[in-house]
Length: 129
Image 1 (cartoon, helix red, strand yellow):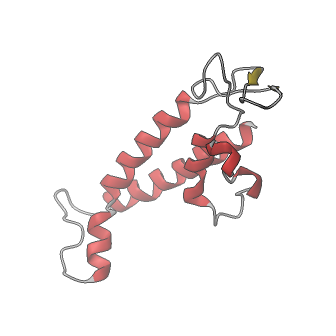
Image 2 (cartoon, rainbow, N blue to C red):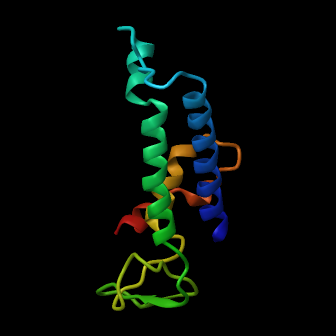
Image 3 (cartoon, rainbow, N blue to C red):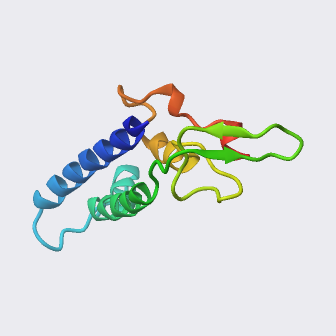
């Protein structure tokens, strides 16, 4: 399911472009949200510099999670579940986590309203167990 990882990467790229264009459209030292209005406070809170920083953090998370091959989920009192793909970062050698992992599914929630978002990417209760 590389599609989920590509989807998140694509949305991060779009967010970075929009934020960078906003920064480039102002003189150095511009202060976001100078007025005391709700819109200005929102702009100050989610200014383009913060958006870029958030994108860096999300890219680091995205790069840490990738498909790592087959694995097994062991749950007490249940039969083992054999997985074709597991997450490289989540889980352990004793208890694998299915790919795509809950971490990537949660990252994708920022763009749940995007036309390319797939409902199969929504985290489920089972993902959080």
